[in-house]
Length: 126
Image (cartoon, rainbow, N blue to C red; front, top):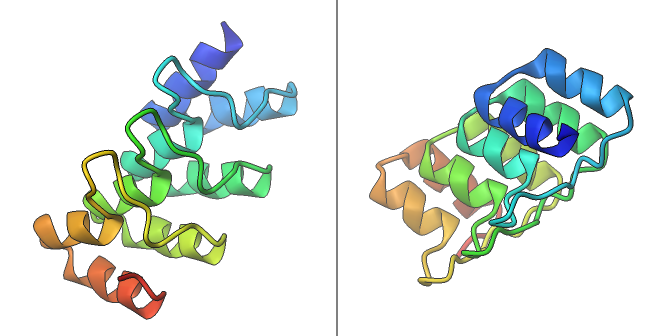
């Protein structure tokens, strides 16, 4: 039950619940049935403070879901520049591709997030 609550809190942006569950010892790399982590969910929805907290507490920056998408992929797709930058600083793979062959950079281009494209380029994305 706590794992489900933790993942829901990450998706909805409930920072206080995330803090409480981390203090209670939850595994920050816990996954749902689609292999999605709290970090992936928070990055997708632009919850910067949660992403930062999860990384500080050992969240694996490059975990991927069952479709091959990562936190960097979703942050790039949705134009969350600060989160993309944070994930790059935590050595996220800038050339990650989903199961269709789309990269984080492809997604940023498709969704017209030129600042994210520039950031990914400066980090060495192809």
